[in-house]
Amino acid sequence: MRQEERDARNPAYTHIEEPDEPTAGHPTQRVWDMLGWTKKHLFSSIPNTIVTLICLYLLWLIIPPFIDWAFLSAIWSSPTPDACKAEGAGACWAFVEQKHRFILFGLYPFDEQWRPMVAVVLFIGALAASCYPPFWSKWLIPAWAAVLTACGVLMYGGVFGLTYVDNTQWGGVPLTLILSVTGIGLAFPLAVLLALGRRSNLPAIKTICVTFIELIRGVPLISVLFMASIMFPLFMPEGVTVDKLLRAIVGIMLFTSAYLAEAIRGGLQSLPRGQYEAADSLGLSYWQKTRLIVLPQALRIVIPPLVNQFISTFKDTSLVIIIGLFDLLTSAKTALADPEWRQFYAESYIFAAILYFSFAFFMSRYSQFLERRLNAGTRR
Image 1: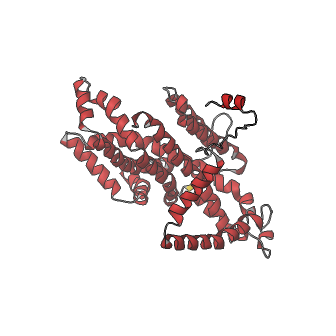
Image 2: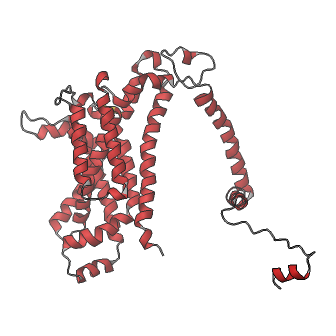
């Protein structure tokens, strides 16, 4: 019987609607889901419960004192370290306040540090634009050429009334970005060629690629940088020198390309044989098949290991200290040379770690976004 008929026959009848079941997005349902997840993963058995309680106890011992040291009792601003040495003082972030320009820009002339700051902004802006899908077009390459040219003019100077600054005085964030972005950008196309060459049917090309990859992957990066800095100039004609920064970029490029090549080769091997046969049936040439069918699928598969190598290369730029270049970590370490601030080394390293983590976390999250976007049409 319909509700209207019941109301008409019995005016005293009052209809009481039953409450709806909580939906998936309802706050109550979310609470129950959270409690269910907690019980399943943290308190599912007696051993898991014991481990969970021990971890909670350790966090209780560590987190409150750390919050008090890093924030509540911290000294945020002071021209001298005296306030940081007082009884009960926490983290001395005043050290970062006083030394942040040296940490960020290294030995670059103090009055000219606006130039590397603008260069960093241009670099980050170009990276952000390159990560935004609507900007993926043929204009991206000339845009990067313009950005690199502008950054080179700003960093070197010597034109447009800018004071010339040799790259031996570069350091901090600009140098780290230049080494990592340029090294990765040059290493990636070389890695693709090495991966294709290793799978080539031509014995000479395959032998050269295998030898290069295995030789570079068999030694640490610090050895490659040492060879590029010390040994490479010995093979040059007398009177010919190679810039120290260029040697570092070449060393990073060669080392990174070998590891990227192996990741790309894994993607090439994972493709079904039918993809190659389908491309051959269409009458495509080798390079058409590789560019249009094989490489796009292979690169999509190996996004995680590629980004992992990108992050590793970004952090490994700290090894350029062996050839006398002051990257971000070295600048943070050198800032402690001041005897008055030397005891506050933890704050210096934490500040550098936050900067490294920011760039690495962005690359990690962007790789997940890119993987979801490129795999959207392949999900079942």
